Image (cartoon, rainbow, N blue to C red; front, side, top):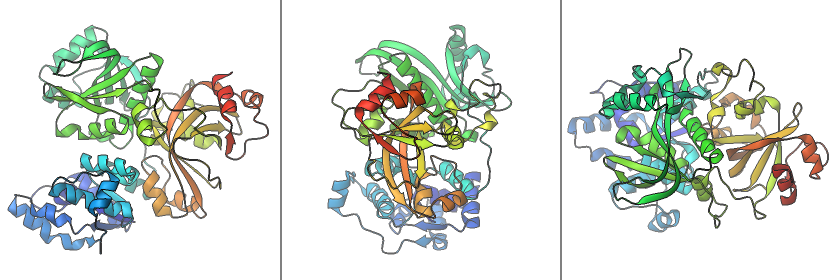
Length: 488
């Protein structure tokens, strides 16, 4: 597979004057073992030449020959730049845009970058699934090696803050970033505030979201009041040791679900500094936008109510998730899914739910934490499009529907590299498993998960006029959809 490394990966990887971070060492080791070809873009030399550290600049330049350069890379014209909606205000933008354009045109399979600006641009032009942060790419390499890695954390618990030992090392970065963190935490504990947290097998916190409900609040320095009920995510943190396991996405899902069930209008949080760039990227993936400044922090906010004039586009799905358009303009489909795949994709509805083993986090896979998921099939149906609704019918045992999705994109492919690069963030399929699946043309549906507020039984399905066994993807009418979803 062809992997393009951005300049912010290249420089620390090739700077021999500093100790090599273990993540970069793992990147080099696993890429070599799996015979992936690591590429650079010729235009990146401009980035490297701007490095004011002369010694580092010369060291990195001297080591670039070990990488394959993209031959005759596609050049982004002014018209194409405008058509794609990319900003190009300076030389840095020009380099970033051309690096991204090489991926867009298919010169490489994957781009690895920790530049949040490039991640935002990738979302704008529709290649976000092929752009990886370093920790995501390490996970990608581990999966493609067909190794079975234990994802030890998945169960989210709602706990009072007084149940948690704030002296554990997980909180050190928060303690260093905010003066008085311990006093603030203690005050919140005494007020019987709650959080959602994920713990490892030794009951150490590896991810946390401390939340608070507000009403008609002033959120930024400009003094403007945001009307309505508001959920503040006061502290949102995933431990570096647990990155790549989709725990941040899991906490976001829990927060969104809380907002829906409590009829909340807005959700917001504060971010600060370089160390929270990953959090900013996660926020933007799920519809948060920059509202303004509160002291030294950036304030990101997301609406939790659907606007009447919303269109069925990816932008609106991102902005208003988990709300979505479901009128007659949107097509609806029922998709059969075998129980073993249903257990992995939707652990909240697994057979372990409510059992003695529900909290045994070793029994889950990381794809259960994701909001963005992927479904693969050998169906030849070609009428599913972006924005459509897919209802997942659990076959064989329950013969019911509890989960649905809103389609982000659909494609057919029998190229394992193409499929794997686009779904590896969303699933735990190994490279070998995907090679077997893509032996013939495969339908890939990328979707955002929505949980239903009730289980739709087989009887409900038949009462809606949907006859026969559901053994393949089936389109249903809007009236049938309303009958089974709302029980009308």
